[in-house]
Image 1 (spheres, rainbow, N blue to C red):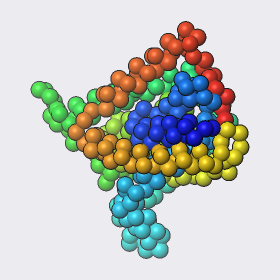
Image 2: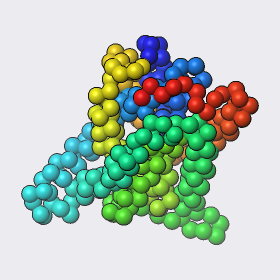
Image 3: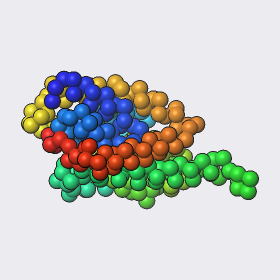
Image 4: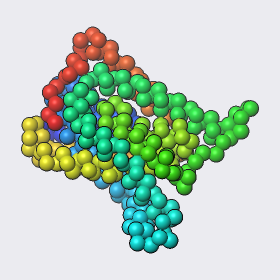
Length: 290
């Protein structure tokens, strides 16, 4: 991988990780359209460490409070009902599905799941799901002529069952095109949570999974097309760009609809299907370097 490729891929990772449009799909598509080799699942996992570092800094006060309360609750039973201590456990519970599936489906993640036909399908299908979830949330928030405004749930009402469902949604993002934030936010909205609550838990839930998968893939640096310099450079770029994006996105969702992302996903998926069907683009464009 050249330094220029790592610069572009780092920018793409930072720009798309927190938006519900799938960073793994965009990394895959960027390489395919540019005629580069597929950067691979390992490269994606490592560069996600950069964007996850942005989450750690952006939510540093929340994370410090949660970790402190959770750790103290291990030794003090009176703290086990504390909201922050419960959130610590819920993040652990929600991380189980992706941990199990990430290990058992490892070969598929690095192989068949990266077929661009599957990416196109998941872009469209999950775009529709996000659109439906967003519309339901808007109906509750705005009410209507014959419908009262319905109060949506906050993170204080998050339970173990909710955490597991969020976790299952997150695990779906092992397939490029699904989007970690898109799947978990959609799941949260369909369960009746507010946009902000769904997004906040989504980002917190991603921390263990991303750091674990990225840490495991660090051992592959230097193999194939992955080398230390360009990969670390892409990760650093992803961090700075990702921090700006997450700050913008958290403000955006407080008052805006997800529909622009829904339209974008569907149009991109359709365009991808057309290009593949016309043999302009191969569904296996590039050899995976991961």
